[in-house]
Image 1 (spheres, rainbow, N blue to C red):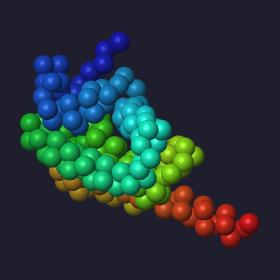
Image 2: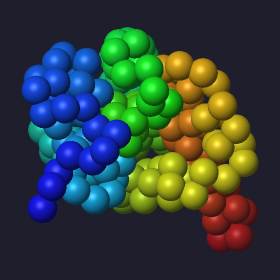
Image 3: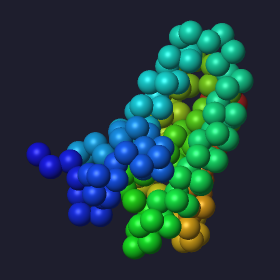
Image 4: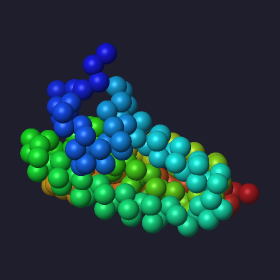
Length: 170
């Protein structure tokens, strides 16, 4: 099975810092469901933080911020080097930013919140309903990032709405 696709960088460029960062250590080159693979790595990181860090609730938004900066900077370098690409499928650092934003806005403090955030974020990132899809039109690395942040915001909003409605019904 061939891992690299036609729009992927050549194998010799996989060790470039921007590619390693953008692909979350080459996880973005998974044979299928690359965005889900990148988010799954972040899910594992979130589960590890949940299990071993009593302050895990306070780390989600700063982690999202770090991922945003890394995504924006690495994305700019990738697009400068590979100008024909708009949003490379292997570039999954933006998924990390969106997922951790979801957890931060949820103030995820339980396994249920972490898994709900993962599933809902992936749903909105894949389905790209309005307004998520409209953010893809932003040029450059900001456009790569913004649709995932919008999906993360929408995922968190969905769960806040579910909690409010459930509280009103019970």
